[in-house]
Length: 110
Image: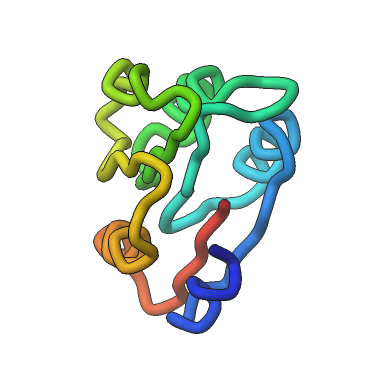
């Protein structure tokens, strides 16, 4: 994902678990967040809830899931702009992130 989004002109940060994702989101704003519901340490559901509290007006979340495929519809937040089930077409991911972009300096977190 990182390579494809970088090729599309996005500056991409990565987090390897829910705790790291929350730390990055607390310190920096992003035009888009690609959030897997199944993450180590803190679930994507909990991260989504925290994003709603920490940055309620500034984020656009694209939720992805494989193992939680049946639960992807349970992820509720006005911040969610797209839900993608794994495996997904990379063009669908790019389109979802593109839909979140609201500035000339594009930043994405995955």
